[in-house]
Length: 58
Image (cartoon, rainbow, N blue to C red; front, side):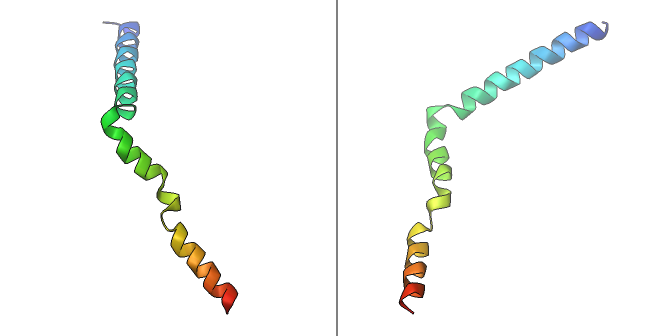
């Protein structure tokens, strides 16, 4: 087994890992969790608007 064989196996393992991650990320079971994570920056939006309104009234 020479260096080129090791490189070929390494490439194959990394390609399989990449395909596995892609399938994991785009699976229907993960959609709900990813949608929730995508909306996290807007989670406290109502509280933030209430604070701004309170400061403007003072």
